[in-house]
Length: 335
Image 1 (tube, rainbow, N blue to C red):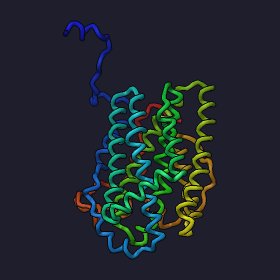
Image 2: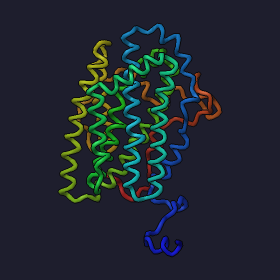
Image 3: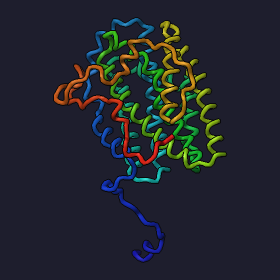
Image 4: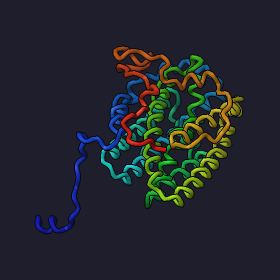
């Protein structure tokens, strides 16, 4: 038996070596992920129950739909996207970071159910998840992104999968984040909004990290391959933006917020492109100041020994700053 096993393969199995730095940024992202780690049960969204009961039915309907839509995207990212990219990345430290991020995506998905358990009946929960499966705009973006995750065969398709991941993390989530940010910024649904804020902090570093890997991989492609992926990158964004406009109208027009959400889409699409090392594509318009303030992860910062907020029970690490994304040890800029 042992002889047969020894002769079965000449493959060398490697152990991850965290004592040797592989680049100027992966270990920093590992540390930042650990620093930000949280779970949904550390929050108490039940504090929102009284506020929820006083919201207009149209606002309640939109709120539960955007959270259910976010659940779909996080489910896809945690179970398909990050694992697929991690499988095709060679460096073991990078695989570890991507795997950690995949775990956090699943925590995000579960956190929405924690909110639902507080606010909705079992029948209402089943209804909103049925709506996810029936909504053509949600299904379209999930299918479009999944296509790239499920068809990785070489560096070019791996790059496109990374592009899809950055679009999801840095752009597509944000039509869903708008309403919770808008409400919590007015003192409504604040406890649930704190969960959303934690998710946004995670998504911000996920998009930056995968974007750095994509930029590095882009530089390894031939000029012809770069032209091909540039065309695909632009075409995909245009398709996703058109669909996001339709999704936004479907959710937000009854609230009179659809135009403000569309402005928000342009802003975040440009952020996604920036994460990929690409120039902005869209003319940015004024963002609702309440939502803009909600994107500032430094808002309401406490010191390490303070609580993260009224609904959070564990000590808070410091908020993200621009310096967290500065990596002076990079040998060359990834452009």
